[in-house]
Amino acid sequence: MQIEQVKELLNPYLLQHKLSLYSIEFVKEAGALILRVCIDKSGGVDIDTLAACNEFLSEQLDKIDADMEEYLLEVSSPGAEQELRNLDEIKAHIEAYVHIEVPNMIYEGYLLKVEEDILHIRINAKGRFKTIQIPYKEIKFIRLAVKL
Image (tube, rainbow, N blue to C red; front, side, top):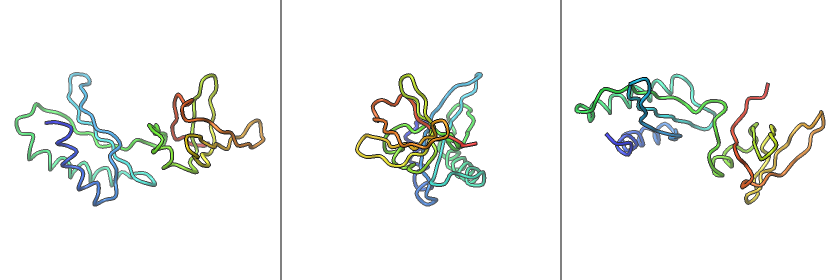
């Protein structure tokens, strides 16, 4: 079974339930083969949505994987602190609280807007709020963050 086959099985379900595929991979861990599917949607994914997707995908896979070696199916969400992997994902999270790493500095603040390739972030610098601009090309890592 190929990852593309899994995507083809899953895509109609994702469209029907307004979900998106965040990632999919086959990995071998501790001697077990795992098909790991990560789904997302605006506002996040709850446990009932994950369970329903797992059940649907499991039923569909049973129809095509009879000759494949045994594997585990994991359906999960990217989580509250998911990595933002590209500029489109960053733009989809305007107003979110983010953690950004650039050379020699780490920022946490609210993503206000993205103009061209410049991110505008509202940070709290020693009790004073200010807006900084960070060029996308300077970002080493960016993810959603949970503000405590």
